[in-house]
Amino acid sequence: MTCDSRHIDLVENHDQQSGSSWVGTDAPRSDYRGLYIHIPFCSRRCIYCDFTTRAIASDSPELDEYRDHLIREIRKATREGLLGSIETIYIGGGTPSYFGHGRLVDLVYTLSLSINLNDNSEFTLEANPESLTSAMMRDLYSLGVNRFSLGVQSFVDSELRWLGRGHDSRQARDAITMIRERCDNVAIDLICGIPKQTIRSWQQSIESAVETGVTHISVYPLTVEEDTPLSAMIASGEARPPDNDLQAEMMQIAAEILPSKGFARYEVASYAQPGYQCRHNISYWSGIPYLGLGKGAAGMRNLGDNRERLLAGQVVERLAPAQSRAEDLMLGMRMSRGVSIEDVRSAQSLIPSIESVFAELVTLGLTKVLDGRYQPTARGWLLGNELYGRIWASVDSDGIQV
Ligand code: SF4
Figure 1 (cartoon, rainbow, N blue to C red):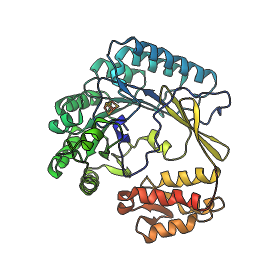
Figure 2 (cartoon, rainbow, N blue to C red):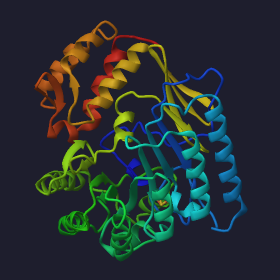
Figure 3 (cartoon, helix red, strand yellow):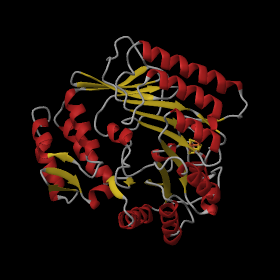
Figure 4 (cartoon, rainbow, N blue to C red):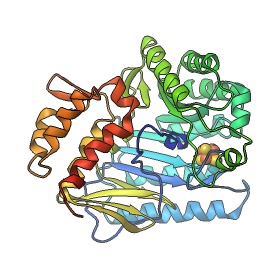
């Protein structure tokens, strides 16, 4: 997913992105299967963005300093044996492609010395259409980057301008074409509920996305984050807040069009052609530990049955075993495959009410039972906050403390 994929209101996004190195001597040695590296720089700020990033001049010496900092972090993690089992790598931001060709090559080359990049590796780079160059793409692909996630958001130029994006639809198409000359694993994001966006223009963006030949499409409703230009515009009356009903209708339209074009919905916001699901993101939703490197990058590790989240080198959240299990079940329900009945049953020793919670979810039409699994229904995905909230509340209602 690209940076913009964090703008999702239907679900609580338990994503990576953020923090300086938290690599510590007490970190587990070989649990990490995923590596997230954060590039907190952009050429400009989009009006809706609250990510850990900032606008910076492309010739700022800070960029070289940050590259050197990341390389030191990678070397340290290597020495501590933390990269030996990494299978998926994700360089996100911010705008990694704005970081610059030479710096990215330095970074990816350093990673290639530490991580066994092979046919089983998934290595994603986020990019924006205006800063991804042909030479950059060629060199990074040669070094092992095999998935490109492009922040497109819309194929309607007036909507892109309104969002404050730095590209137009032609640049987006050209960038996709350029990537596909070498690499067929191309993901893009689309945002729905943009003011002045219509059902027709939303359909147009979806259809344009399909026509480009990308293999993965994520769709997100525009959300209003605090302290963004967008929230100020809404507060002053300059812009109207997104219409939730219209956004739900647009999400439903995507859910109808994309499967008819061969894109299977495998997660609430993610659609992929066969074989092109994002393994890195699936690992986030499967409770698999990941290492975060770079300013603002978060990490997650399991210590026995406990779980810790880290941000900026500090443990920011510690989950008790019951909470870790509830989180696994909650995140599992983001995906179309859901969770197995057996998993729910086995969680009962930690969360006594969990089976009755899932039974209630079925009664409410948020979940269905199929092939021995609880799976989200279309209604469950639409009312994601209720679905996930009820699972999470099962821990609190049982009085289990951190
Ligand atoms: S490109 Fe825009 S949305 Fe993405 S991180 Fe930068 S400012 Fe935020």
